[in-house]
Image (cartoon, rainbow, N blue to C red; front, top):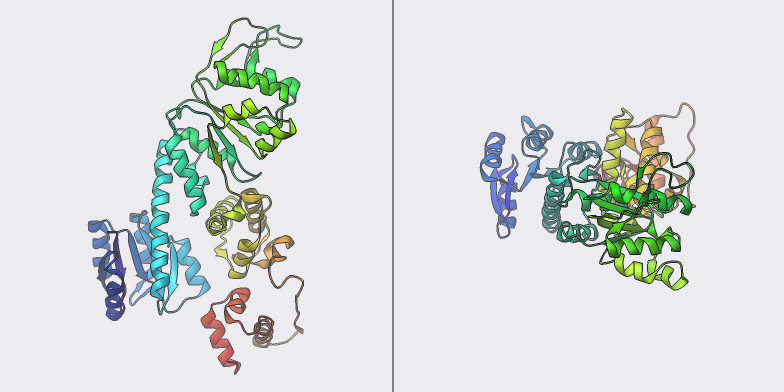
Length: 451
């Protein structure tokens, strides 16, 4: 059984949580912070349920302490006084998620199972990360929680050390090159080069010399011998990126290399044996390209010994929050800003959008938002118009009148009530759009004499 520690200053809550969870987990409970830290140290705890308000202690400080000393421990913060600021700060300090009291046990159990799945995935990625030998590639660039991406990494783990050809397919922007790097840097060839060739970017008349290399004097302008990509990749991995765009005459030459595992540079009579792991990537449906006569069927059969389909972002939307946070951290650091998170209304827009440009498009959206915002949180105003079109508000925007000199509390009241009316008195949608907690909205509506 996985081990769970619950730290809360209310004994009644500790008893209730232990009773609800002890059939599925080994559960320890304590009201004492020092004792809790000792339990984490001595018992190899998997999940900590941590109250944010612990009397004399600040639970956020305790959360930071736990993550600093035991980074693999999953921490779920609990609070009866949830606010956007406290929940975002908990996430920023390393909490997996936060829940508000009174606790819905079914939701908590689902959350804990997802947390353990995430921990297992993180462990798999960490194992791959330990194997990487190049500072040019950081496995942390690949972040996910979705089952679809877990399946991709299951395949990578099974075939990483097998010298078989792999075809990586997927739409533009899905991260096919990152998957190729993950295969190489987790394989037995990790200490040898990974060479990538963009078959779509190099004209046909130059691609042959780029791949095969040439001897001095092989043609006009060949003033010295040049090693081609095949030779440079010898012992390691060669990625033929966008191979679906390769001219069909060159495809025949690639097929021969795959069959013979040997090349002859231009202007040479001496063949060079190859020890290369071949990867190919494409955003095209190569079966359809074969039917159109644009791609050789025999080459396709050679390449797709193993096929890895990288899913589009619209089919793995559960990865959007973690990808958003990754890019938010990346560009906040790069632009020397302290962006604390994404407001719920903006998060809803980000998760509703279908991303024709996939992860690359999400990355650009967050980069732009971080660069342009003057606020601590990314809001709807920081997102491009195409994202806003996915929300109910798009095309149905309403306005409130605000006058110079009008009291701030009156402006707030008008905004809250008009938004509440717009969403047909749906408190959840109203609170999300305004970027406040449902409890805060409930208090405001009571103050205004609304139900």
